Length: 498
Image (cartoon, rainbow, N blue to C red):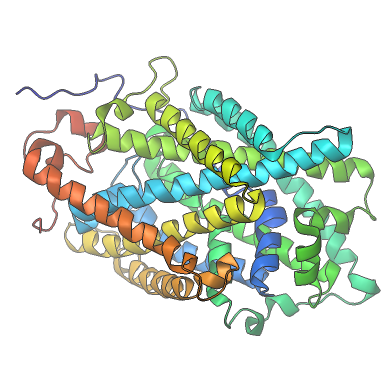
């Protein structure tokens, strides 16, 4: 039978629309500095009870910088919107790659959908308090979902301009808040560095603190997801990746520490539990004009929206990459002729978000803890799994190709990052009950990690099914834009299929 592929136009994302600044804006917007601090760090303090959250951000930044060495080395040779999926495929074989793809879809959808919980709760609270409105979190979330559905179908460079304005504003206001909190220590005392002490991180809550830190960085690895749409992928992706890690790491560590200075290290957990996402604004409000505090609250809301939009684009492009290679239905591999956006993938992500939101509303679940914190923690765990697998894949990939990239990029850094990320993964899974804030005997502590084992098993089973029933599709796994014209042969060196 003849092979059917999407037409040439619809199988290719819009080329050359993103430079280094635009990619940085997309990935740092996904990390959302104000969201990570006012939402993630505060909730992390409150749920885990760990004082070392600021140090956790800095440790995670160092580990991710190490991971980025091998990651960007592969990005110089492989340009594909599938990112983790493609790199695992090239390094560990097609079955492992498809398993990684299903894990990635679960992880990024969890991150994106989870953010609707905190967005809806914060926006509804703000509107109700400031304007006397009587609205619910889920209504705000659904409206945001509708707006993002429209933006997801527009030109990506236009989305980048929106994110640029929002990101710059929130970084500036965040630094202003940090300066105020550090300049006003609790009860007029001295500046304390206790939350940066290793002893406040190493302990029973270590895994919970580290995965809280990783959740704040999720999105930085998306530089490779947008590679096909950049002007110069080999130059843009590496620089954008390192900039994103450095900027987010310093902002998170500084802000989480500054809050502990303003409350006192011994009171930060109690304050976070009492005041929640209002904590940072309550700490600075006595020392700043109401205009700056209100501006910060608005930017917190827009920060959440920017993160939602950025993750929406990431999920849509993963679905596009899989549809283009016909691992998933080929309709997902089509883009809008007018804007170059992955139309079907964008619509699918919106539909999944609406279904999940409906379920949470019917269950009357807490939007902050059960939707935001639980789902974003689940998403962070998935990305941690993917980064560990990708480090191993980089080692395998560079041992089998001729290159002149040097031992540090191709062997030493990937090996060290695989060890570090693997250790964090083990500790995180062991202490997942502390992260969720549930009893150690709760089945939830194993159900969440087990969902990724199930996703990987589904991916493996589907890969073997494709190998047996559709060998032409199987052989194009990981080829990206070249998959529609690939001949029926092995397109790159991989280990013999199991």
